[in-house]
Length: 331
Image (cartoon, rainbow, N blue to C red; front, side):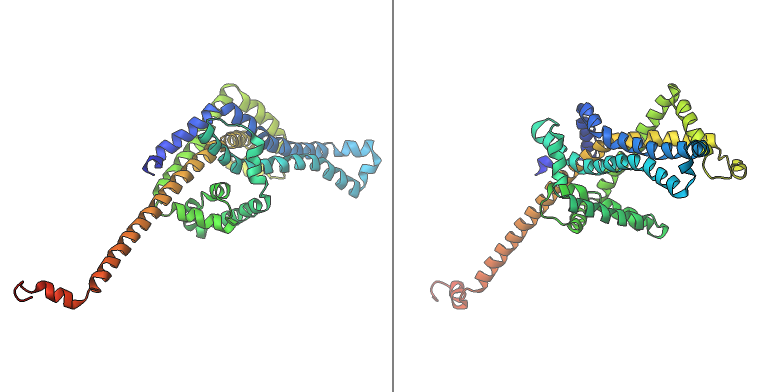
């Protein structure tokens, strides 16, 4: 068991190593879940923006568009394609969080990352329970963002961080049982689990997005994309005259949207890093937990054996003990 015990740093760097060695596969696997969501949102807001901007000209050219119900129908029709693409990509993104755990397991056993469909089926064959697990996690997250529950929510977030690994690796565990099992595994290892989470947050939520932002700036991609968003920002129902004193302008909004886009892309494509690390950490805690259980059983058996021996000693006939203490001639 000691052989399986790994430090937080070893798990962190091993997770990055697995991701780096198979980065081309993971980038391909995450392409639609990440870029599909962006494409869907672009279609939703882009087509709606184009339609509202050109509505008057279209209404003059096509008389039926003057009717409110027709106009509403057209708006809905322009939103549906993007919404369908976004919903499918978002679902694939949720599935990938569980499937990558299975990929990590496969890599540890074979040294390869392959057969994405089979790994996805680890999740999709239990779709109902997986959705229910995400629903419970979403409810917990909503409660945790309430200021009163920030501290408690943050603490329990650490304890519940392995719920999707439990779902992937342990059969017959209910969605509620996943929360209980995660809490049981992390209990007593809170500080180390918190350290791993901190490393992953700094690496995938701060360092990598900052690095990609520098690349965007150096290639002037930030300026080009911000021009696209700036036109859309002008259509927002905001009193820019009143909020400009707070440095809230269409240009500022556009630049922030580019930063959020870069952030989303990096966080999305590095989801496998986080999932792999948590899968490795789950296995580490699982072996630790198993070792502790075996040790407790061994100690319990030892105590039981000692108690049994004492009972047997107390059960000896007192007359035999009395005779053993007598001198030979007295006996």
